[in-house]
Length: 265
Image (cartoon, rainbow, N blue to C red; front, side):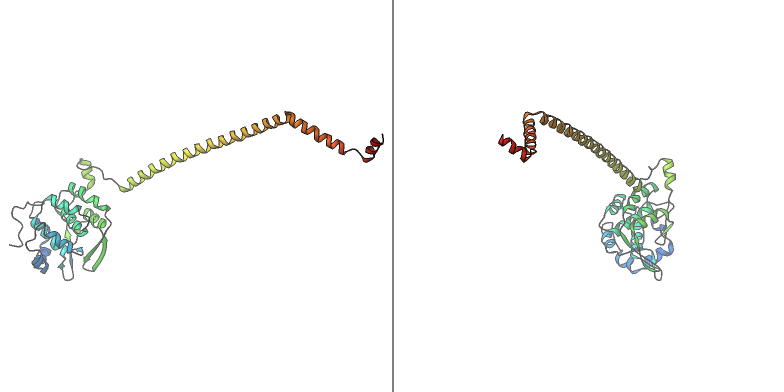
C-alpha cells in the first residue's frame, strides 16, 4: 500500500508515473531503509524538510544502493503534486537541492514547452552541487545539471522521457526563440560603446571649441597689446620721457673740455 501511486493520479506519458523509473531501480528504492523510514506518508509540504536535509544528488552508488535524492524523486512521482507546487519548489533560491529535485521532476513529467520555459532560466544558476555515483562524490554545478536534463538521455541513472528538440518547437511556433545572455551582453556593450563614442565626440568638439577660443583669445591679446603699444607710443608722456632721456644722453656726451670752455666764456 505504501508503494502504490496516490488515488486519482493522472497518467504521465501514457503510463503510471512511478513506471518512469526502471523496474530494477524502483524495486531497490522500495527495499532501501531510507524509503521505509523517511519516505512513508510524505506530502508535498513535509517532503520539503527531507529535501533540505539532502546533501547530494545522484542515482545509485556502491552496491546499487539508491541515493536519497532518487528516493525523493520516486516519492514525488507517487504523490504527484500540483504544477503550482512544483513551480514554487523551482523558485526557491535558498535551497538548491530542492530546486534540483523540482527540475528533475519537471523534466520527467511536464510537456516539452513547459520544460524549456521553466528550466532554461536555471542555466543562470552557477551554484555548486555534490553528485554521488558509483565512483564516489563529484562536484558539479546547477547549470551543468540543468543542461544535462535538457540534452542527455540518462541523468542520475534514470532514462528520461523523449524531449522534442527546441528547434522543432520554434518552427511550429509553440515557443519563442531563446534569448542568449551573450547577445544581451554584446548589445549592452554596443550601447555603452555608442554612448562612449558620443561622449568622445562631445569631448572632441569641446576641445576644438576650446582650442579655437584660446586661439581667438591669443589673437585678441596680441591685438590688444599692439593697440596698447600704439597708444603708449603716441601719448605725450611717453614722448616727453623720450625727449628727456635723449637730452640726458646728449648732455652726458659733452666732453669736460667743452664744459670748461663754456664756463670761461
